[in-house]
Image (cartoon, rainbow, N blue to C red; front, side):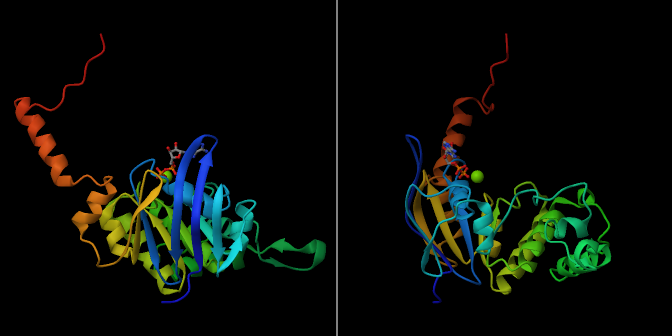
Length: 274
Ligand SMILES: Nc1ncnc2c1ncn2[C@@H]1O[C@H](COP(=O)(O)OP(=O)(O)O)[C@@H](O)[C@H]1O
Ligand SMILES: [Mg+2]
């Protein structure tokens, strides 16, 4: 096995009196997708915020290439090659595709005070980068980002991160708000990023999405790692049960069945306002 790019070592995170993460140990390797699973409130986004420079661990360390790192802000994490793509791609709806690709990093032509944003070149590079991920529907860099579908926006953001040299790609619930086809696009791009040697952290609630791309899985339950395993080591049912906080789905189903029988087949009544 190769050495990890990024590791969390005995990481704890508290906000005032609230302990959110407990003794987290995780290793992330190049060319691997780590799926971070767990119920709402388990602490997944907090793990991501530590890795992307939004928060610092209360105790414990983050290692990059085996050396301790500390990120004062998201910019520092991004300077280390850690790119975080948020659910809606984090792009600006009223900007063109070419513009948003280079926001803050525009290629220029000319010299000194005559430097100007080279729109044609920016468009060409952006379109080529996105198309290299198989998104051939994006072929005009002048189009506005707001006109893209959710999956296309995510694809654009991922292509941008890869183009500018990210080594670690973090995706917090990228497929949560997407339809089946759109999600399939994003999953394909995650696989492509992995093929190009990036380390990917993929957060999802959908077991099928996790299984479609994951090599390595970690399940968080109430802020602690409850399971850490590799592809093929657990079945879909086992993973689903772990994500439900260790309760088996069979038990839940039996409870629902029992309820339905006790209530003559009627679903639970919601009290109507007086
Ligand atoms: N800044 C904060 N201050 C206090 N509590 C927080 C803060 N951020 C997250 N939490 C708490 O930490 C827990 C985990 O949250 P989060 O990491 O967002 O979970 P997930 O992404 O798995 O749904 C939640 O109980 C949440 O309320
Ligand atoms: Mg979250």
